[in-house]
Image (cartoon, rainbow, N blue to C red; front, side, top):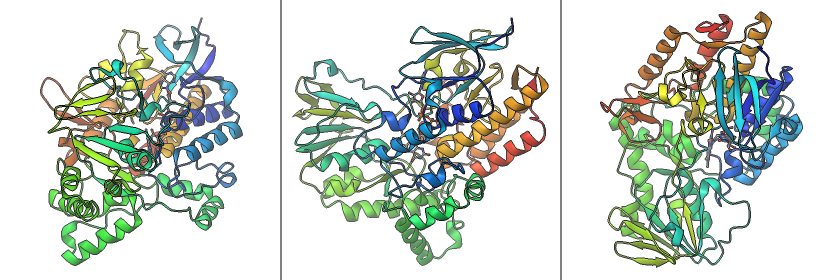
Amino acid sequence: MNTVDYDAVVVGAGAGGIYAVHKLTQAGLRVIAFEGAPDVGGVWYHNRYPGARVDIESYFYCFPDEDLYPRWTWKERYPAQPEILAYLNFAADTWGVRPHIRFSTWVTGAQWESSAHRYRVTASSGESVTARHLVMASGQLSKARPPAFPGLEDFRGRWVQTAHWPTDHVETAGKRIAVIGTGSSGVQAVPALARDAENVTVFHRTANYSVPAQNGPLDQQKYADYASRVSEMREKILHHPVGSDIPLGAGPASSFSPDEQQALLRQRWARGGHTMNAVFSDQGTDIHANTLVADFVRQHVRDTVKDPAKAEILMPHAYPIGTRRLCVDTGYYEAFNQSNVDLIDINHDPIERITEKGIRTRNHDLEFDLLVFALGFNAFTGALDEANIRNELGERPSDRWSRGPRTLLGLMTRGFPNLFVLTGPGSPSVLANMILDNVQHVDFVADMLRHMGERGHTRVEPEEKAQDEWTAHVAEAASNLLRLNVENYMVHVNREDGTRVFMPYVGGLDKYVEHCEKVVADDFVGFSFS
Ligand code: FAD
């Protein structure tokens, strides 16, 4: 009775799912994937809002694959969503993964059947399959927080979410648009929408730090150079803390004179994007070093935004820089100098309700044609919970994680045999290049499944001691971070006592890869097989 329809079910067909199907089928396994969307692409399918862009340079935000890499090139350093979606389609087609994927089909349940060492996976189509292994490529930022404003159902215009931007045309030209939310997506969308809207009104609660991407054309010579030595490039970025080639902190801020500090800040600013996260090696742990960087960004806001009242609202003060995801923009602060861009500080003028014609705040009754909600995600556990994965005791992973995720390498959780979570909590995840994260995880899983196949094993789960040690290591790595004490989606707060757990592994992708390499070299020490 120990038979299965498939060796592995893959959930999701974003970058991680595409690569998982490719790699596991290449390894000769029988694989089926389910994707709720009608096509591949994951976040790049769903987040098709104007201005959506990657913020890791495109030399690295792609598959470091010998065959694929030289056959593609990018136009920009930080490509926009259509180009990334085209790339993921190219990858899916080149690798021939589509026939393995059931599109427009959500996984609605996955029950571990302990006597048969398999999952029974049920889908929204009514289909039910069994598989030895369950590979969750369901994304950490794939479950958007829905808008929950009273009166939304009364609105007679159109409303959309950045994270589920419709595939049909959303008219923005000449429209009166409200943008609610100023995280990464809102910051990207505002300048793009302001280009042709009659008016964009930004409803603003927390001023986030945003730094310019300094986007531009891709250096084709540099890309061609990487294309000629993909394996070498791949090893190099796998052994970099965030999976790219951005410079690391130059040293503790106190080791530089004030003039040198300012010169470094200007240098990193000119390079753009996430380099501002690592100007000084101690800016994530030392508030004085952090303030130097934060002040530099605040000065940019002051210098850029002409209206002092708007500049004051946009000035990020609520938390140290980099303790929430740093936004990377193209013309965000500049957009507020346009006569068609307004700003409402909802701390002082809160939204009371959505009306038939627009939005009523305490002090205004405003009319809009289009409402754009950019409200962030139920990160890390949102998609896992919705897939309704149950172990033999009927528990979901998040039931076991009520005091923070407990994993071995972020990939597996004790009590859930044969369940692999790609880019999950306990791994570098959102702190590094997530295509590379996915590739590294899938390669690790493929190695493990080969190891099991060779030995006739059909069940694997972490040993308790190894899981405890990894969980403690993840916590220790984050223990002196400023960001541990800031409200943000990477921190799990325990309800009973307020203690905090930083979910991704902050030790760096390079250190993480070293751990994984040791585990593989040591015949998957820490995992128990049967
Ligand atoms: P996803 O792309 O999220 O794909 C998961 C897929 O699983 C989705 O298509 C979803 O529909 C599907 N799914 C989920 N649950 C189910 C289910 N129950 N049944 C069936 N299907 C399901 N990362 C970076 O490294 N650099 C960046 O610059 C960057 N920019 C980003 C910008 C935006 C706007 C967003 C939202 C994310 C960004 N990310 C970035 C993070 C991004 O999540 C990853 O880079 C990467 O795309 C993740 O790929 P994935 O395959 O792991 O997950």
